[in-house]
Length: 219
Image (cartoon, rainbow, N blue to C red; front, side, top):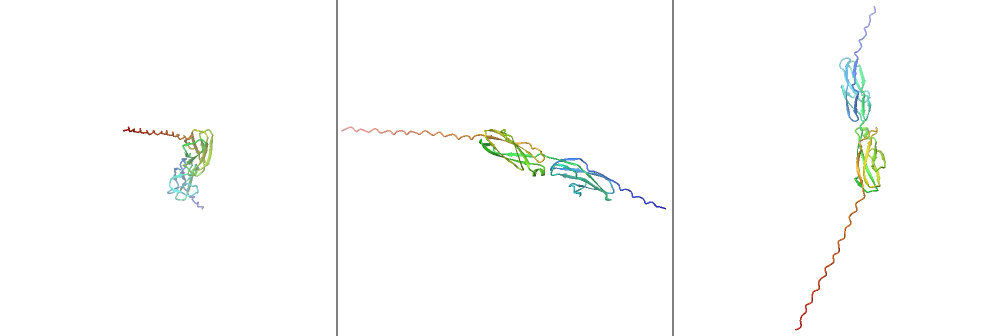
């Protein structure tokens, strides 16, 4: 008589969801919410946020942030009391943010002056803030646009003609996102000459009257 060996019951499967898809902006946190059911016994939930295979935070809820824009796949990990594990990836889209820019420079110069302006850009993305920025300058005098690439840039321009000029600059980050323009107004004008002092008239001294001699009559 052959005694049949009963087959072990299959372990209950785990059903898991990482939620999403998620969307946020660079430098900001996005909340990830996973859910799971099934398995054997109590379920242990965790998230692998950096893609190294290990759990970075415990629980169904995690917070993900990226220093740069892009598409990322943090992994939701579920493990039951029998060691059965389920991994599901979430999709997180991190959007680029445009930089902001400020500009400074003189308000008034003389014609023929070579004028230096300074621009400073800032960016919410930590990676973008450490990369070179492309500055597009418009000096407002019809000479066209000038591009300078550096983290915090200066631009020097020669103004030959008198007038009032609107100088503006736009900053572009490494992903090509443009800031709102920043500007200032420059007056190119000749210096006003100092008024010439009118000399005071020379006063003519009043002549001193000669006293009339006293005549003594003869005795």
